[in-house]
Image (cartoon, rainbow, N blue to C red; front, side, top):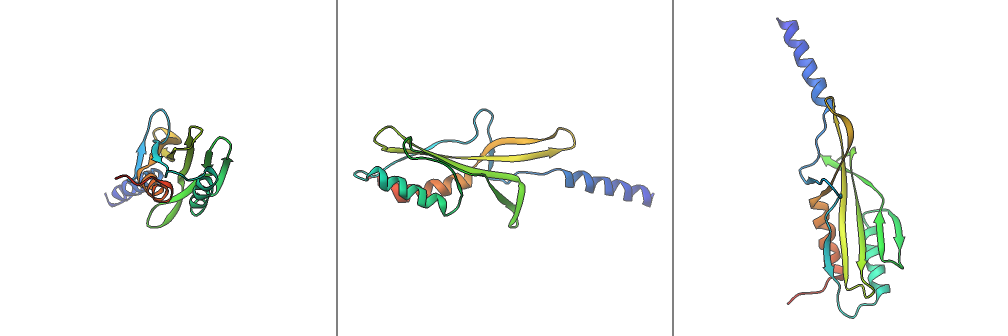
Length: 152
């Protein structure tokens, strides 16, 4: 009986260790990863200043992968982030996508794309699309404070 219980316990440990779970801030999406949030830019700020301010803000946390100043588009590289107790995981990654809207750049849109590598003995493994709600709010709040228009 003791041997049987030990075998079942060992199987459960192996089974549970093969499964991974996304952080609580991960929001699964079905069609397009991420969710766009818009920031109305301050009046009277030149495009060059807006661009430099956004680039400076993003490079504090991310490596930039694509920068197209003419179209006003920026995408960071994937950043593998911690999901619990400060541990970095290869199963969870996020990046920021940003674009200025229109020729006058009065609006900047930002989104966070996050992927969680689901690994399950039942379904195999694959990247699940979504976004990280905390990261999106953090980046949005930072950019809003730097380039956003103050509402009255």
